[in-house]
Length: 227
Ligand code: APR
Image: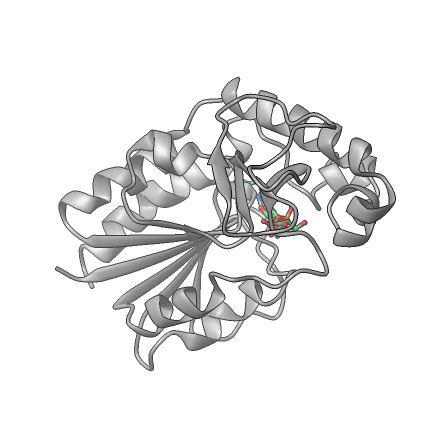
């Protein structure tokens, strides 16, 4: 089976009702990213950050996977599909995809703030000040914040390097190291990018499908059958 690697960003979940970050009305228009999504912010005001992620976790469970998520899961019938997502929602999982790497963490998990190996499934529960891990430290969201390493990056690079086809969906390619993954695609590996407003200055080899995730993945399914 051919291996399709799919790199997704916030635009993948836009049609499910989850806000992106840098579109108009994006999250970073309303919040200061360094206050609510950075390790500095956590040190300064952990209560604010707990509230920010509790809100996003609650909202995630009010949303459903969209057609794009569902079609990617269905593609597993004909391809070895590996999803590398920047998204912290669980919509790929809930759509039925089975091989997913979360580069920036997962809203449905909490972890110890002193030992990153202590990770806990919390589903839609809030994390409140005073909630402690088994080592007695404050629990934090299992999210990779600005200023922190991306532990899954090495695994993600290996997967992109072994892709037969790479598809990028719904990301402005603004944030590294995730945005650099496309450069690891093997020579000759077709690269598709699905986005109604595609980023500028893409490498010539990238074939743009200027549509939303749902219609875009529908188009992708047709195109990859001819590869
Ligand atoms: N279908 C597909 N793409 C869409 C849709 C849609 N319906 N709606 C918007 N988009 C596209 C936008 O055109 C944009 O290119 O999704 C992209 C969203 O870009 P960002 O908001 O920058 O999100 P993302 O690229 O995922 O951000 C990367 O930044 O703040 C951090 O950790 C956060 O993982 C996030 C990272």
